[in-house]
Length: 234
Ligand code: GLP
Image (cartoon, rainbow, N blue to C red; front, top):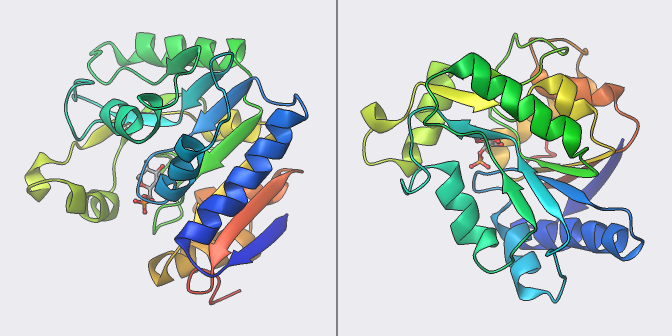
């Protein structure tokens, strides 16, 4: 596991961008695994400002809220369009479809998408409870795409983006930890003191399904980009 300490989120975005750019120039990237949340926003700004061409590449996102249309401004479809896809067209952008009520079918479809598009670099943020994607504490490390019931703490943390807490969906479709771990390279980004405990537990605590991020200790190519506050307990 390689840890890169940066002074702030802007520098973190640049550090992640440089890694992706070098891998792309070396011809190592066909599929990018993407994440939502405020954490990767500066990375996406770097990509948008760059001259990198993604038109021959595919993207596979980690997750989507159940029940939200792609046009809903709180959906992860909308987020990705606004922060990246509108400015940087890809060959294909894959996300789970939050409007599908047949969860089993949708999860099987998404697992097929992941199987057909092996992820070369997966970008990850992390939840305050160390969730990755929407894999909450207790999720199996062998898990593939599933419908997840969000924990109260995740709903509370994510409610900052919604008008009121009741508007936050209670469920999401998420790529499983097994699929995340099959990515060739993983870049995890974390900024701010709120993430310090999750980062400490994921990197230096025991490897346990109670701490989803700790699965990363078992991956051979993980880069962690953190600011001082998130790295405080390391
Ligand atoms: C959501 C997403 C995660 C993300 C997390 C942290 O739960 N499903 O992929 O890592 O939020 O979000 P933020 O980056 O806004 O702190």
